[in-house]
Image (cartoon, rainbow, N blue to C red):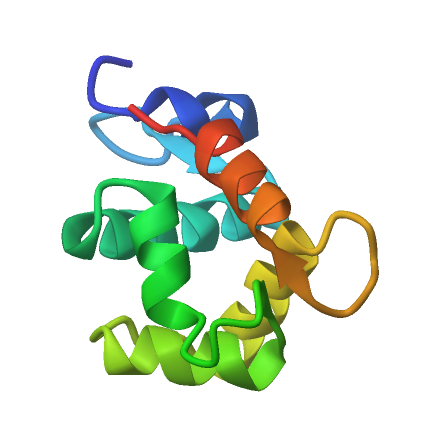
Length: 117
């Protein structure tokens, strides 16, 4: 459908005709994580269009990596509030090596990988 974002299309199915207009519905909960990541990234991109600028703004101690608290506080200070479940989703998405913190390479990979229409 022309009204459905491309990133959401894989998660949709045609709903049974329950009224005058057939509709499409999310098939399961698989769309939730991409939606939350999309929302968070869009909010970050509104503040800083380049990944290095937002990473440096969040990395207040200049250590070159972000832990859970630094990420949450840094995003909050930028006006991007994320709830606990969204923070967990964001951390699991960003921390690709499972080390418990996010370095710039991981953050840049996220920024380039998660593009949306």
